[in-house]
Image 1 (cartoon, rainbow, N blue to C red):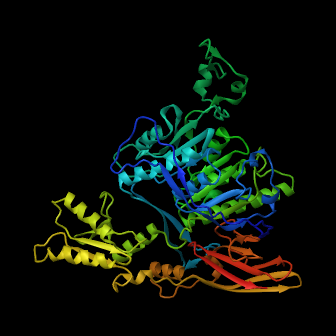
Image 2: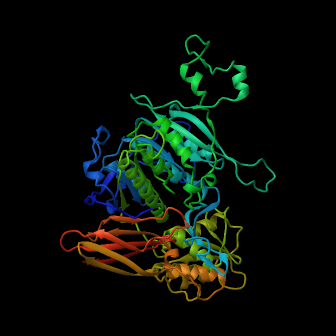
Image 3: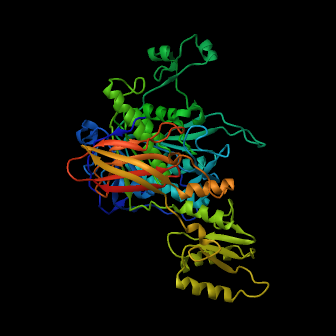
Length: 624
């Protein structure tokens, strides 16, 4: 793909902070769990505009009735939010989107005991990114750690479903993707949040995959729970058809029939005679592995065909589609291709980067198609927008996520993770391990929770190891007093602490050498010339060394470590407007590394953003 130049529109920050009221859930039945709390109000935090992709200046000139009630604070285009989706949803409610979303699809973590990871590898043609004749995977970024205690998981989903209900428009449709592990409980929560009268379908997505070694029937389906919201407005539904089976055709004489609601007799519709049988609630769609062009290396990626079926059937062109677990961006990609507006969000930086790259490619193809007066997809409606912006809610920390840090700590210390214990995170030797939140130093409140848990299991005499980042003085005094009563050979439930900032044995993993680049930026004869002369990611090199045993792995071409390059020719130090985007189409392709752009009038700052294959970003700026 040729790097594309772009024009952009500036957008101010959205700075408002407010309390948002939530309507109580009144449906039945009501599922109960330990620690269940109603959600009556949430705090709306500011959203900071961090990136824009608008290759044609579309956001400024975009018009149409679907945009008439669009909040003026946002440009008219796709919205991609980085942050905890509870805070993102609260922000949307407080800033003009309550009751405005026509279709919601979410594919949340299933609480299945699995670690979801983003697998990453070097770029380049076969042989380019190889070491000693072998290809090496560079490691894994944790996307979700899907091992939450059952009660925490249910509360997590309950709160978000209540917020999503507030955003859904009258006549809107809601789809929740799940599996057999939690589907029954999630349906009960949906009944409580939306009401049983809102239930429409239980859709079975059937697929084939490599069989597992188990003494049970092979699990090869997911469930999609479909709820509607009809309060004075009829729900949108465009009937689709599938080819009828030979036995069905034989039984009904070659014509598809339906049961007339008034006469209870068989009638034949003209559509059904030509299109086949109305679509059933069992969908046979191949998993993502069958679509090489779609692969993003995102572990929970769903096929675009699945989302296109949902969106095309249950929304109109121009409708607003929301996915607050955007993952690899499939929902936004399908919405963009089907002429719908879209909003996506995710807590994980890798998901935002993956989605952004994917949407940049789709929009570029749509722009090219419009210039050539062709359609990107057969029978596709016109795009609802040709731009999107990226936002960060509540100044969301772009550094290592808590779950990622926990997994790094676990690996470095040698903790054996426990999947069945609802409180302790694992074991270290014979000791139970509790990983305190890395968002604050270990406090007496954290230790009180451990005390209460130990009192609830008096038969467990094991010691406890607490892993933390920092420790309050009051917590040190608490520990001294606790352990003072647990001395001697037969002492039980002693509590030891591994404080990662100061512990010489285990703290080394915190040291991070950032990626760096050597970039030449010049203005010559009305043009800006950007040349990336070198790039190095110490993290990538370190992971290669760990996997191969080579002290200094050799990477012949620095571009093998780079996932994409973006340039802003007039960077204001706050919002990165993507003037040029170099996103290789295939894993075997490399970025160009050398770029020429029209220079803006007068003096400006040129910014070059380089993203490596692990998602780490390097920003180089220079006034020209």
